[in-house]
Length: 130
Image 1 (tube, rainbow, N blue to C red):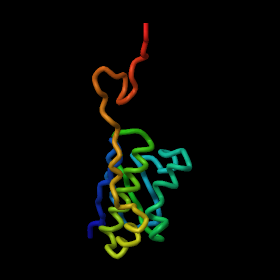
Image 2: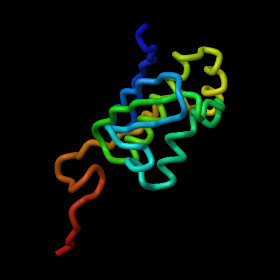
Image 3: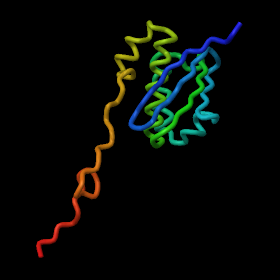
Image 4: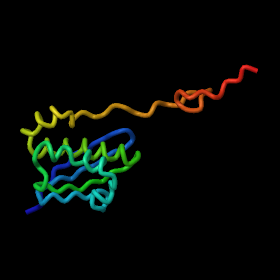
């Protein structure tokens, strides 16, 4: 019999994470590396594991993650969003818990576009009176 997987996609800023969730021992692989090696900062690790912590699913599921685009912060947010969505596909009764912690909401904040005549989105070139 084929192994059963639950697939979900998470997004944040420019990052997109594809999650493959299955029952297991709590192994989390991100782009072929253990997740604590891929996300070396503790703050990123805490952010990624939040959906598993609030639903008490730590050590009960294995996840294989492919994440691309953006930086590490955006990728950590994307993995967190994807894990939360995958958990809902796995067990719909977890949805109210995840929703209460705002883990199913896609963070809409994006980088503001650069405007002409400015150096960045809002930074103007130095002003000279004379």
